[in-house]
Length: 532
Image (tube, rainbow, N blue to C red; front, side, top):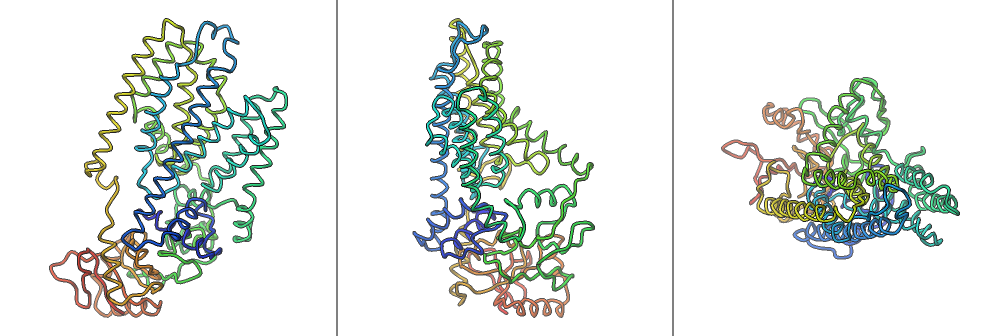
């Protein structure tokens, strides 16, 4: 489990119980959490099995991504083989990369992206985004060879589903339609197809836009972009417990309530229902936050994000880069002709990656776009008969190196031997134990608690169906400030927590020889509790 996953599960739980006010928010796109909430709600697992059931949903999303990739790969193979073969002088006496080569390289790229670039154990919609992007690109290619009305409508629906999956696919949908329109604008009936697809796209996206705009009292298709810009670029506020203290950041509409400055104690028992409300709907607590374009911080972000994306494309899989270069050299100018045929797919990939550059770069956001980019570069290859043998050697060699690397990575993940500690999946068995013990202490689902720790990682609270309503922030040495405070200050903190209707306080046990007075350790866990 991860912090995002807890919020997705909370939003999904609200959806399952028809709590529409909390099932929709401008930060988490709804399709993925609603799917989680529906499955978990139907199964109704015990705390020990809730996270495994959620991971099974993730595996289902992986299978959908695999099927979407297969659809795109087949569309690329068919298009490269059948469309405009030999129509240009530089492409005569040549053929597309043989199907078996495309299959080997395509699956090698997919497994690298799906298992390493993405984090398949992470409770995020990134694999679902990959599926949507693959289906979008594949349908665009299929429309070129046959424009039946149902296909055109399905293309628009896929674009709309992409927006329901992640907000960034809404502007990318317009980019896709514009590129598609320009691609075959001279073909008979093509403009009408793109117009119909665009109307269906807007019709599919309109309900979510209406719900979000009605909830916020202003037009919006999602607040992730503006909030990320304000957090990471300018004015660089902290995402949690923003009080308007940063000059020029705006006036909070309904912030969390700061009850004490030293140690920093905040209360947020309000309309947002969830395990940890500040991360269940950050758009609510940050309403009023203003972003500002400033050149220097923007350049600072670009100085990090551009090299990071370049690393992912050029250094993460050098064997794949070498394969593309060698095959392109064997293809010669015919490769450029192939790219001209497939340029809308290049646009989708480049714009998709480019949308993240001004904000924040995370490899898992890039997966679908990286996959489309490399598949297109390979599909554009056109080989003469004399070059087939050399291309076959390159294909087989790169396939085996990539498969061995993926196998090695998988073993290191399974045995917790990744190069960066903590970058793989972590066990939550201690949180399951903590949830069971809290129930034995008399806590009931719906009870309120306070924390002196990072509330986003309080998986025990979700499993025990508790609500965190107050916290001492772990950032800025808040917890250390509490433990070093005089006894009267600590008693005042307890009174404030009790005033927020919390029944107990939970913290990570301090590193001292004995448990502090008034606290008890939850057996079998690193957590300590204080009853209020």
